[in-house]
Image (cartoon, rainbow, N blue to C red; front, side):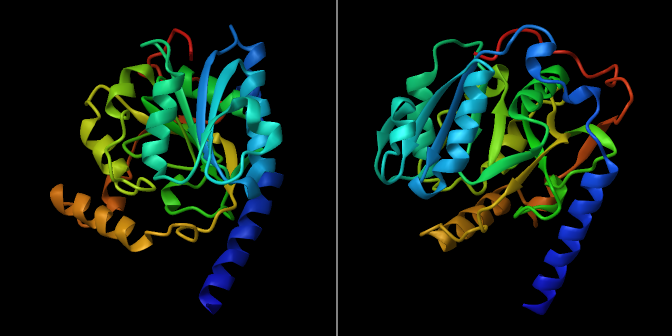
Length: 280
């Protein structure tokens, strides 16, 4: 317990240091000022107690032109009723599949998948979308600040980079799916609960010419405690172990690799193909 408190204190100091030392740069311009507005859809499963985070995220999503489809696990929040497509208990992965099927209109669609317990603290949803599309990532996510509740240190921000090309993206709290990768994400496999172990399947389906990515210049903080709300926590752990065993991998961190980087204040790497099209 003392170790955890000391580590949390170090992370808070590190977060404050990063915030003071690394100011936003030109890569964080709002999406509306950099080419045509993005259109598309966001899906998320939410609990009423986290409505404030979800309301803010929905507002940002709609400002970028994204359509929104939500599922309420408990009470439908009045302010979110117009974009809530259903309610009731269920496995996160199954509910996200249901939402995706209802929202998808085009094979060219990008899909933003979000949880209900995080917020952006540097950069915006718009800048995350813009940079992810520009980098051509098949899957992407913003970076966690050091003090964020994150499962993997690999996801914490490296503020001296704009973005990293990687072989790993976590299944939460937010990730963007490229249309060319959609069929490898949805429908999500049945019985995957909160989704632990999906990252291994995504890694296995990534082609040598493709890349995942972490956008290090856009930061989030995750407020949820890892595993605290999982009624089947042990089954999540068991399934992850099963997926690891199937790939003969001893630890999921073995697939957390950076293959190339876009350094802060430098041009985008020449071999990162720009992705044209819509997010819709």
